Length: 64
Image (cartoon, rainbow, N blue to C red):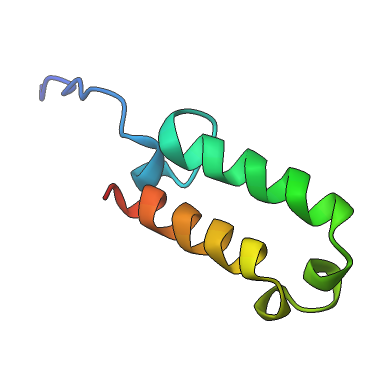
């Protein structure tokens, strides 16, 4: 029989979840901002804060 290998849990960027770490903070900030920003609702490219938060989220998810 083959033994089952035990791996440590994958980081958030690998699993696609944004619950912890920098990616989690960026994701929650983006959600909070977009709830009150009319420009982000229409098009995030029209809001400098929204663009910065999306960029931060992408970089955090990549593990930079």
